[in-house]
Length: 467
Ligand code: ARG
Image (cartoon, rainbow, N blue to C red; front, side, top):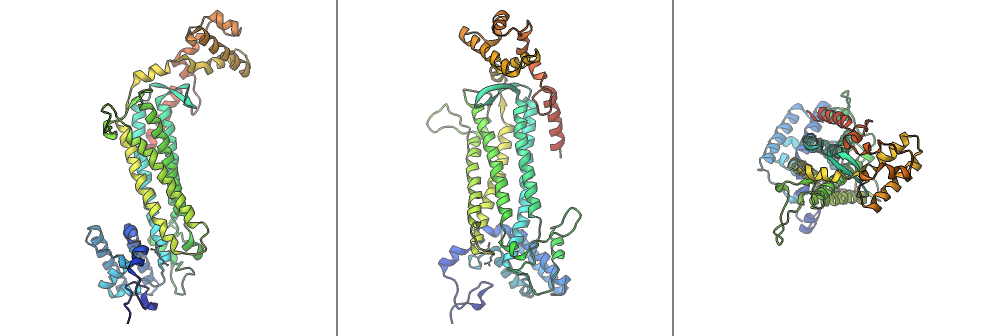
C-alpha cells in the first residue's frame, strides 16, 4: 500500500504529496505567526460546539486544556512545526489530536476556509491596534519637536521655491495631520475586519445546528452595543480579501506620508538648507568619504514606501480574475500583509526616533526666512486693503519685485517714492508689511500659521495625544 498522507485530508488519497510539492505548498513558514489567533478561534468554536450540544462539556474542556498547553509551548519556542502538515491550522490540530481524543471533533462544522478567514480577521484587528499605537508614538515625537523648536520661522515652499514664511511648528503639524488620517484609516480597517466568518464552512455553511452569534461574541466580533457581527454570505466570506487590500492600502498610504516627511527632512539636513541636524544615531557614514553623514533612516523610510506599495499591488493582482470562492492562490495573501505590517511597525518607530534626536538650527532658519520676497503676497494684500483689485495689486507688486531686482536691492530697501511710482496706493507705511512678527500675527483664521492659531493647534494635539 502506498504511503499515507499525514495531512488531515488524507482519506481519499493513495499517496502522500511529493516532497517538492510539500515545499512548494506549505505556508507554515509564514502563517505560524497566526497561532495565537488560530487557537483563540478553536477555543471559541469548541465552546460553541458544546453550547449547541455537538460535543460534551468534558470534551470542550479537554480541547481547551490541550490548546492552552500548545499555546504555551509555542510561546516558549518548544513547539515543533512540521512542513509536512502544510499550515498553522493543521499543525495545531495534529498536535492537539496527539494529546486529546476529543480533538477529532474540533473541526466539526468548520473548514480551513472559514478558519483562515477568521484567523486573519483577528490578526487584522490586532495589527491595526498595534500600528495605530505606533503611529501615535510618531505623532508624540512630532508634537514634542513642535513644542520644543516650533516657534522658529522657516520659509514654506511650493515647487520647492521659497513661498511664504511659516513657523516650523506649522510645517510639523502638517505632518501631524497626515499621520492622524493614517490612524483613522487603521481604525476603519479594524472596523472592517470586525465580522466573524466562522460558520461559513468551506463555501456553503453546514447542515449542523451551530450558533454563529455565540462564536462571534466569544471572539469579540461585536458592535459597540455588544451585538454579534457575523458575515452575511458564506461564499463571499471565504472568497473575500478586501480587508487585506484595505490594510495594505492603509500601510501604503502611511508609507507615502513617511516618505514625504523623510524627503523634507533630507532636504532640510543638506548643507544647502541646514535647517536641521539629524541625530547621529539614525545616520551612517560613507566608506570612502570621511566627511559624509548620510540621512539613511530618512532614505530608507522613503525607500520602504515602494515596498509597501508593491505589497498592495501584489494583493490586487492576486485576487483579480479569481473565480469565487476559495482558491489556493489565496494562500499568497499572507506574505504581503505580514511584510507591510512588519515594515510599517519599524518605520513608525524609526520616524519617532529620528524626530526625537533632530536638532533645529535656528540661526539658519532665521537667515532663510529673513528674505523679504517671502512677504510679496502680503504686500499685494496691503494694496487690496487700500481698495486695489487683487489682480492689479498682484501685477504692481510684481513690478516692485522687478524694480528691486534691477536695482539690486532688497525688496524692503526700496524707497517709498520709487514704489509709489509703480502704484500710487503705496503709502508711507508700506514697509511695515515686512515686519515678520506682524505678518504672522495677521494670519488668524483656523488652519493658518499665526502664533495664536498654532498655539491652539498645539494644545489640541497635546490633548489628543496624552493617553
Ligand atoms: N493555508 C491555507 C491558506 O492560507 C489555508 C486554507 C486552506 N484551504 C484549502 N481549501 N486548501 O489559504
